[in-house]
Amino acid sequence: MSNVIDLVPDGARAERDRLDAGAYHQLEGDLRDLVNMGRIAADLAHDADGEPPVCEKRNLALFAVYHLREMLLRFEMKYDDGDWRVGGTAGG
Image (cartoon, rainbow, N blue to C red; front, top):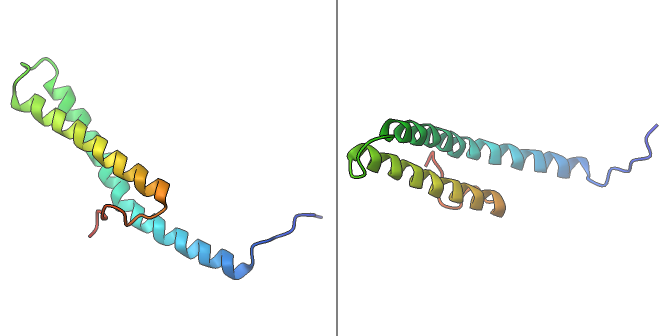
């Protein structure tokens, strides 16, 4: 037998679950964009290893790494604010 008191009414819990489901749905596109940019950045950085300091491969790798950094910062802001609409969404 449990002595735990449930302070969240069933209706409030259902509403919270609905909101969380919507947030996760909106989150999916951003998450996949982050993962893909991480792969691109790693591939480009790997391919640029040993190239001269001024070359297209190295420049693309640096662009990908810095773009990934910006994507991660926006993602962190969305997470901290709890508003997945901040900064736009991947899907629209």
